Image 1: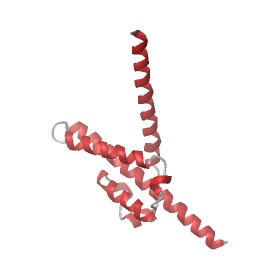
Image 2: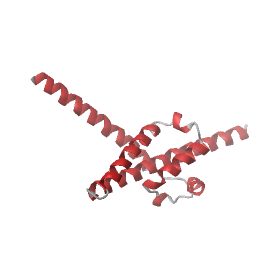
Image 3: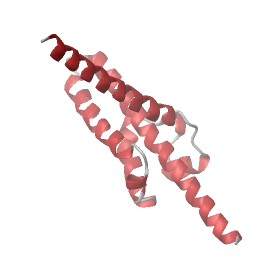
Image 4: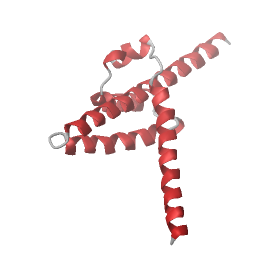
Length: 135
């Protein structure tokens, strides 16, 4: 019985560590600065990105870089996480305002991550086009 408890506790700790590591990776990416070209393309001020901009940024990803969802690390996972956190926010809006505020911050971080990934992809595409024109 004790060995089963240790196994379950270890499994829980491993899962918790994995989730924390995953969040740390994409949160650090979300804190990268955005270029002016993305701000002009998306029509969003970098300082004013909110959780509600997530859908618009994902649509912009589909329009400007359809391959981005497949090639970008963590984009589909962040999208799934955003959907789950969005449900948490909707359910806790009136009952637990503190949880709803936390969910809103998480949604904002998700939207910011999508903006950074899109910005980096657009910059790489522009570099490729300029390199091919130079040759």
